Structure formats: structure tokens, C-alpha cells
Image 1 (cartoon, rainbow, N blue to C red):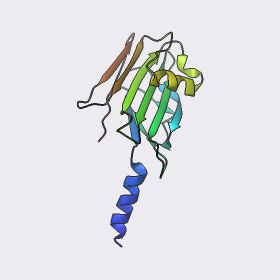
Image 2 (image 1 turned 90 degrees about the horizontal axis):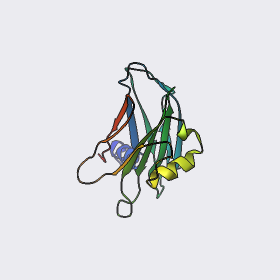
Image 3 (image 1 turned 90 degrees about the vertical axis):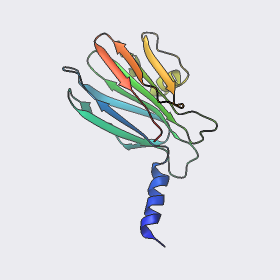
Image 4 (image 1 turned 180 degrees about the vertical axis):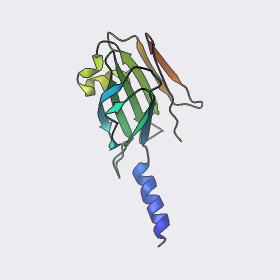
Length: 163
């Protein structure tokens, strides 16, 4: 048996339906900190960085469970002194039944500090938080859509691909 081919197959199986989130902090004075995550299905393989200071870039990786018939679906929340940022992601196991989706929300009054499962369910079902007017969600289709949310002088842009 070809060991290299076997390892390649194993890696592809393990990383299938993964979601990598890369955050670049282009602000001058906002540090993202104290990340929390919730996985409806799958798990965090590479955990989020505890801090993302101005001028830096960090990434984390969520993936489905090995041999699982569910995808990588969940929520990542970062805090700052002025707001919370929530990123909802869904890379399902079965593309015939579900779409690849992602969502962004910025809340000024720490709306995302509650129960993470409730925040995820609200965002997944297209329901913005009461205090947040900066919620956007997209399904990945033929063309890649960029989501942009703005709150005051904070602007967050996100894209997702199924590459």
C-alpha cells in the first residue's frame, strides 16, 4: 500500500467540511480579545487566538468530527472594549440538503455575551439581536458574496469560499 496516498486520503477525510476563519485587524486602536466559540456540530481544531491587536492577523480552524455525518457549524465571538463581533458559519455535511452559510454581527452593548447556543440559533435563523442593526448573512452560491457590517467607525468585511 502506498503510505503517502493513504496519508493524503486520511488528511482529506479529517479536514473535509472545515472552516478556517482568518481575522486581520486593520484598526489603529481596537484589540479583539476573549474569544468564545460554540460548535453546533464539529469542533475547534486550531483554537482562536486570545488576542488580536491592531495591525495583526490570526486564524483558527473548525472541522467536522471524523467519520461524522454532520458538518462544521458554529459561532465565534470576539470582544473589544466597545463592541462584540459574532461570526456564524455553516459548512454542512450534505450540500444537497443545506447551503454553506456565514453571518456577521456587531453589537455595541455586549449582546453576544449570553448563551452561545442562543446567539448561534438566532443568527442561523436570520434574527438580529435587539440592540444590533449590523447583522448580515449570506448563502454561498455561484458567486462569492462579501458581507460588510459597520458600527460607528468599525467596519468588518468577510468572505467565504468552499475551496
